[in-house]
Image 1 (cartoon, rainbow, N blue to C red):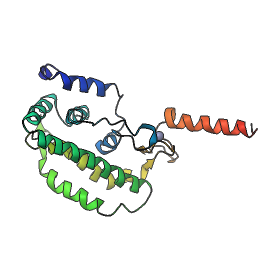
Image 2: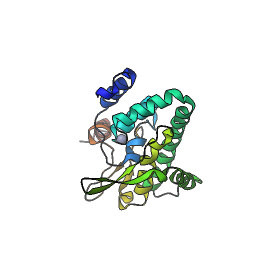
Image 3: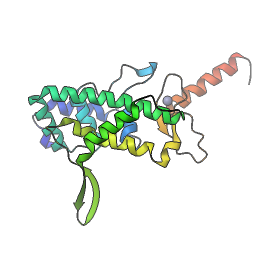
Image 4: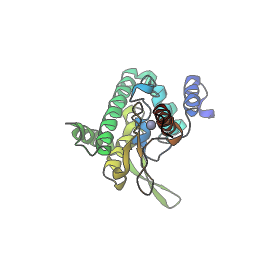
Length: 219
Ligand SMILES: [Zn+2]
């Protein structure tokens, strides 16, 4: 964290984000969607309210190193318009991601133009995909360019395209709680999971059912 000295706000944002608890999936696109509330319960809760928060989120996802984040933030100060554009682009990408994943989870046709929009982003950002080589092992990585801050969104765009074309897409579900709207992958063997989180939405549904039963005099 020493490389972040001189950027106290960013450190605060990182720490604040850290308190939001661990990320639950390997899919960048699902975690990206979960940075906003989609239904009444937490509509005002946006984890990506400004460019610093967006950068901090990318660090938490391991899509940016601390050093890259510092470079992105210093460049953002010199080119605030680009940073603002990237934030708007991130919010647009989040809606696109939600609408596409929701359509898949509901076995519906995606809203018109959404697939073209994703293809446009793939065309713009995929040139940053590269093969990295460390100690005789290869892995996929991204070229992150602080002069093009939208490059930090490339892993999310890639993850979205990968998820909708993977076998996992058949396990995508929308939480059944009326006021939730979160998307999750049902990893249960018989695909019977109904809520994003048993200890949250699942519990609230159980309490409601219990109250209803008691109200009607059922056991
Ligand atoms: Zn839920």
